[in-house]
Each structure stands twice: as C-alpha cells, then as structure tokens.
Length: 614
Image 1 (cartoon, rainbow, N blue to C red):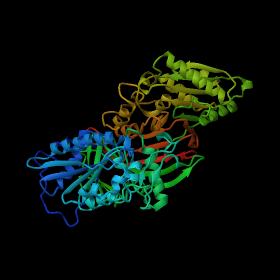
Image 2: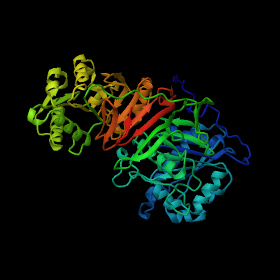
Image 3: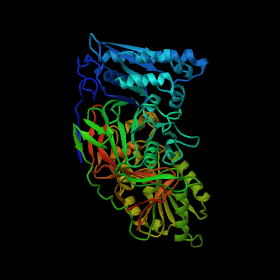
C-alpha cells in the first residue's frame, strides 16, 4: 500500500494544458486517427466543458476547433421544439465559450447546434450533413433521456454521419444521457420497483445490451463495445446497478465481461480506441469496475441478488497519473503498471461464547425486518416469556429527546410486530450495566447520528458491557449508528443530507480525500469499519474514504433492513439487501489535484442473502 499527494497542475488537471499549449497541431488528417470518447458524468460545470474543448483542440487539424452539439436527448414533442432548441443553444454557447477559454490565438472555436430533436430530423440527411464535412473536431451530446435519444438517432443518416466523423478523428463527448449513449451496451434506468438501493438485484435496473443493431434499444452503433458507461455515479449512488450490469455481462459474453466505468457529476475522462481510459478532469473522479479476477459470481436469495468476490476497482482522479488499459485490464501510474498482487485473507468475523450478534444496516425498525424477527426468535429461545426477562432497547447518539423517543416508539412497535410479547425496557446505552444485560432476554442497541458517537466511544463501561453481552446466550442486535460504533473504526460524519449540504452533494463529497473523518470504535468487530445505510444513503464514498484514511482496516457496508448475523462460526448475511466489502489494504492511494481520492487496485466483495464472511 502506498499513498501519494499530487500537486495541482497548471490549468486543466489531467490534460497538461499550460497556457499556449492548445494551438491545434495543424497536421493533415491521419490515416488512422485515434477514436476518442469523452464521457462526462452530468451537469455543465465549466471544468468539464473546458476538458471537452481541450481534447477536441488538441487534435484539431486547422485553425478552428469545429464542434457540433446534438440535442436528441431533449424530447421530441413538437410543442416543445422551440423551447428545447432555445435551451440547447444556450448549452452550445456555453460549450463554445469554454472552448475559447482553452485555445490561444489565432486559434478559435466554432460551435454549431444541429437541430436534431425528432426522428424526422435524424432521417433528413441535410440536417446532419455538416458532420460529413472535413475538419469536424468534436460532437457533444447533451443531457436528457438516453432512451429517447436512441429512438431518435438509431439507424438514421444522423447516426451514420456521427460515425463518419468519429472514424475520421472527431471526438464524441456528452454529459449524463450523452454519456450513456457512448457505450453500445447502454444503461436505461430502473423499472418501476427499482431504485439505487435495490439495484444489486438482477431485475431492478435496465440495460440494453445492443447486440442487435437493428433495434433502438442500444447505445450508438459505434459506441464502446468494451465498456459500460454510467453517469451521476457517486451523486446518485449507482455502484449497485453498474456492478449488476458488469456481473450480467460476464454471464452473457463470458469472462472477463465488460468493464464498468462510472463517471461522477462534473467529471470526465478520455477513452481512446476503446483501449485506454485516461486524462481525468473535472471536480470529482471516475470509478472503474473490473470483474476479470472475480470469483464466485452468482445470483442468490429470493430476489436474485448479486454475489461476487474479488472485483477490482479503481478511482481515476485528475492529476494522479492514473490510466487504465481496457484491453489488458490493468492500471498504471505515470506509465508504470501497478499489479494488484495476492489478496490477503479478510479479518476473522466471529464471536466467542454462546451468543449471537446481529449487525444491522438501518431501517430494521419495521415489521418486515427479517433480522429483527431472527433476533426476537433468539430472545425467546434464550429466555422464554414464562421465565421473564425483557428485551433491553438501548439508545445512543440521538440529536435530542424527541428523536430518541421516536426511535424507541418505532423499534418497540416493530418488536411487537415480529412477535415479541414480553417486556421492553428502554434505557440510555450509557446507563447499561452488566447485571441487567445478564438478566435480559436480549439487547437491542440503536443509534442516531454517527457524528454524535464520541461520548459512547469514550465510554469504557459501555464497551465492556457490550463485549460481555455478546458472550452470553441472550442475543444482541445493533442497528443504524450503533452498528458503526462496534468496529475498529467508524466514520464520524453527520448523517448525509442533514447538515448544510444536499444529499447528492454529500454523496459526491465522500469521495474527497479530506472528507471522511474516521475515529476509533469499540473494536468488538476487529479489523473492520462498519457503515450502515449503505445503499439508501449512497454511502459508498465512506467505504473508500475510510479505507484511505485507515488502510489497515477493511470497510464493510451494510444495507438497510439487512444484517450480518455473527456467531462463533462466522458471519452470515440476512435480510432484504446486500453488504459490501471494500478492501484497500494493498491498494495504491493518492489525492487528485482537485482533492478527489485516486486509487489503484481496491478489492470489492458483494454479499447477498445467505452469503458468509470468515
């Protein structure tokens, strides 16, 4: 493991664009010009538009950088045409201004909006004819609806003209939906019951594989055949669906499957000849998901949830020197390949004695919680109601008395709903004693906000009581922030979306090197950092941030209405969703020139219902 901090580059990070460096080469068109995609993860941040313009200018063949903007993602309702063209022109003007800002005189930029909104526009060869002219340097597909875009573009003169320009060296960039169409296998959202938090289930996200070019259920005909691009990646918690798509691609096409590249909002990179991903730019980073070394890929449980070990992930941040060889499935830093090496065994996750411990991922205060029902069954077995003994409901780290009382009410109701008929005694976790825990039928500890765990963490009595409790026959369950407290370390940041930032902004910020604040936990689950609410709260960045901050500790994220049931034999996942292991112990960590985390060779495991950890 190594950690490196990169100094900021001059101008645009990742593109080596010092002042005066962007005069076009004026070289004649190459016989085999490079074919480049510039996927951008969302938005129109000026840094991404400059990155696109700079890449187009770097390979321009005359003194003008000729760019064309394609708004096919916007909508095809004739009633909205005038408004959509007006909005698209505003974006074209932004792209032009950004391009002008990165070129030097006498070079200029000329950006033209092609009025392709309806299929009739795409079918009219005259509309896309400019793309067949010499000197086209770039095409930019605006954000919107990628499915609609392909219904407009597929198998039309417009798509053919785009391919013609692309093969002659014009770059193809795009943001959001414009990112998605750049891969032949195109992500197409979620079905009605699908969301980011259940997207690790096989049928809870939609991908058009693009094997049939006659169909419009695909990306561009000349799109990447090696990569599946996704967008708004950290911002909208989309690790789950890209992992699912990569896993499905292994089944569909054989090993190693397609590579997944998730590009975050305000961020882009350059993919050359469908073989090299490099030159990251913008405000965040892009994640690479590689199943070439994966083991045990399967779909488990009643909801067909992905189960796989040894997925390799990388974070490409600007200014880190990270590049990725798509064909060879290897990552390099400053041109030197960095091999992942042999992976060390995970820390043992078990407890001694006769007890059982459920590590809940949040939302287990519901009548449908399978882990809570298991906990109650164990409590009844340990101390039947006829012999007395209450379930102790201990609370920790709530913002105020009202929040604590709401938690007590909801968990008490859920305990009743899953069959507990005995007493329920609500106590403050700091007031627990070994004697009352020994008399109890079971102990349920629930927590509020992880940023308020400091007092509990420093309470040696609480740590001793909990350590003794898990050795006894009565079951112990933790949920929400209380689960985080039990690890070797925990993330002490506020609950996402509840401070002065939006939920989406928090999800992006978690992937910054200075964002995740780790503290020492109680250490009952040694060697792990535990993160609840993983998929609902988009806390993927906390797993990476904690692994960077404490590379000797393995990050373990647990989703909602889910728990790891731990006993002397190990740990088994139970409940509705998934758990994720992020293992950065042998990774190379670095900090991008924009402050985002960069990483090479971070292992990931995906656990579904019934899967075990050692």
